[in-house]
Amino acid sequence: MTGASWVVVLAVLAAPPLFEQGVRPLRDVTPPAEVGSLSARACGECHEAEYRQWAGSRHASAFTNPLFTASHRRAPQAWCVNCHTPLPEQRRALREEGVNCAACHVRGGEVLTAREPDPAALSAHPVRREPKLATAEFCGGCHQFNVPVHGARPFQYSTTPMQETLSEWASSAAAARGVTCQGCHMPEGRHTFPGVHSPGLVAGALSVSFSWEGERLVAEVRARDVGHRVPSGDPFRRLRLRLCQEPSCAAPLATRLLMRRFDMRPEGWVLAADTTVPVETASTQPVRRLEFPLTRPLPRVLHWRLDYLLAESALEGHVAPEELCLPLHEGTVSTGED
Image (tube, rainbow, N blue to C red; front, top):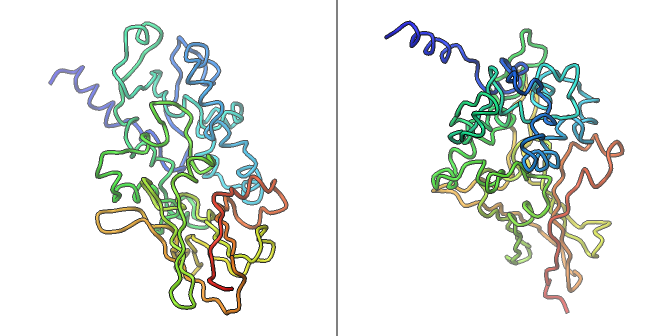
């Protein structure tokens, strides 16, 4: 092997991971000299369509959206910032850009692309094909990590998963079919990143059905074509199914929450209960069964509502209600009463 070849091998081995689960800010994010800036606005001068798509996405507002702002104000942890504004330069500027173009596409003075670069791109600035950008594992660099060890110095994660969307996907029927995160969250290569804050996407992926088993009303919440559990990601996300006597659901007869619950024990935070809709696998159906024991007499018709609660309850009163709750479905079910 020549000396030049050894240099290339050593450079590859020494290269830091593209993302590191928030342990530290991104490393080696140096813009090409031809661009001279890490701002998304610089990229938008040529990549206008991608810039517009990104600007309307949740990635762009990762640091400035009301939920993160209120949550980070209550618990200003550095590891949160390392994912929501991952560039070291964002400690001084560019915070309003959240997870911008450079966070995914710039390393070591080169622009990374999942596809083979064309001549026009190569003439504009250094470009390097990086197949990892098209993989689910790339997304897992931010969307898969464990519960941090409280007060640990240096910072470290525990063995309890906090966000495990990548692991959920890895065991899923979607993964078996070759569908990656990008297949749903970057449709046709667009940089819009639809997700939990996209009402149409979430509502279209979930359905609710009811049946009577004696005096128990049984609901089934089912997911369709989803490559992870629902809810996934942040542990404070919950699906809420309410059963009511009147359409407004001002005074529910019963409420069920589909969520993960963590308890603090001597060994640290542990997962105590999981009532989410499970991920579809070769052996598991993506459905959660919920029972409502009811006492008659009842109205002829009961009303129900399914909502997605997007933040911890402590943020109520600090964030607009529409930021906290995403209405998904509603309907009625007959009780058989005269």
